[in-house]
Amino acid sequence: MTTNHELFQRAQQLMPGGVNSPVRAFKSVGGEPFFTARADGAYLWDVEGKRYIDYVGSWGPMIVGHNHPHVREAVERAVKNGLSYGTPCPAEVTMAETITRLIPSIDMVRMVNSGTEATMSAIRLARGATGRNLIVKFEGCYHGHGDSFLVKAGSGALTFGVPTSPGVPKANADLTLTLAYNDLDAAARLFDEHSHDIAGLIIEPVAGNMNCIPPKDGYLQGLRELCTKHGALLIFDEVMTGFRVALGGAQAYYGVTPDLTTFGKIIGGGMPVGAYGGRRDLMQQIAPAGPIYQAGTLSGNPVAMAAGLAMLELIQAPGFYDQLAARTRLLTDGLQAVADGEGVAFSTNRVGGMFGLFFTQEKVESYAQATAADAAMFNRFFHGMLERGVYLAPSAFEAGFVSSAHSEQDLADTLEAARGALRTAQT
Ligand code: PLP
Image 1 (tube, rainbow, N blue to C red):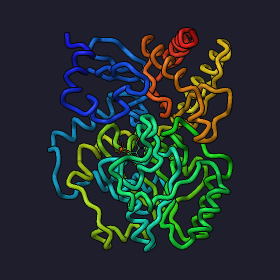
Image 2 (image 1 turned 90 degrees about the vertical axis):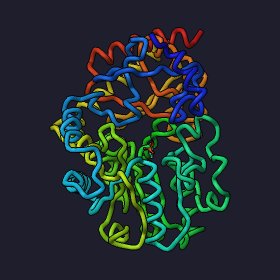
Image 3 (image 1 turned 120 degrees about the horizontal axis):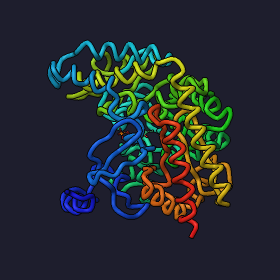
Image 4 (image 1 turned 30 degrees about the horizontal axis):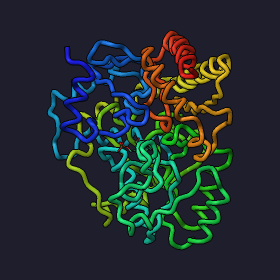
């Protein structure tokens, strides 16, 4: 039998850090990653046959659980007709119709191949449409690995202590202004200072890359007003929150209308897909309708569209999000009760099907609080859970995801594992 260790040894010789995306490598929690052989429902199985209840869900897309037959069969049907055409295909039109119906702020959409592509394209559009150069982002928010975003970034960049990456030209980074998340006064001051130069403000409407931090009441509305007042575009990066916190995304959940929105993850049903869209007058400026260039050999790929459409069908089932939110609540309330019972300083955040776990007594509303929580305790807890067959994101700075495939028994098993993991983590 090939072991996880053996595979990781080979992988490290051939791929930087042995992985194709940094956080997978377990560097911040220590130890070695497992290699997945198979995934189904709420579970992953590694190459050694060990089963894990999975709260990472391929970092978000697997909202109906892994390998859902409806999605898999849609892919199988699509594959029979060829893998890529390089011409328009009908599924792209259905996809655009579905997105614009589900997300009222989007009149027109462009499909791309990742969340990173979506956000890079959205800020190019913001700059092209406004004729301005500055972009505002938030400390601890992650928008993919585009140069403009690797400035005080979250996710792996934060996990590995390089929130601003070498290789991003200073001239480029200088065009990205950063703000503290959930501090509206700071945003107002920044906009006053740079009123005529800000092309757009991009935000994760629920931050999910510095652990999980929801916006304070009125915060997103306040940012909307600032952008409108100063002629900047409000861009919601809903790569994570889109179709996750509600069918209509965070913009529906909080009742705030952005000018542009980016998507990824769930919209591809597990295939490499992203999208950006928004008001017609803005999207009409994208090539070939307008002069702002953006393109993609595999964009709107028929197999990827089939997977995404099948996924979007499933999540429109009545009551889907109520049930998902109820399950997430069961999990976070249950974990809180277990931690309280064990006398561990602990708090949780949750919105819809995403959640955050913090080893601190405080309710976490800011980047400063998230980074001040006990990360060493998280690392011990992570390994205790992994040993007991529960896979959490291998970093204290990532949100967790519940899927509709997580049963009450899975949640109960998770809580039981947490009790044991917390006991060993304290000693
Ligand atoms: N934006 C957000 C909010 C994300 O969470 C991510 C990835 O985690 C991205 C953008 C980048 O997406 P991708 O990894 O598909 O490039």
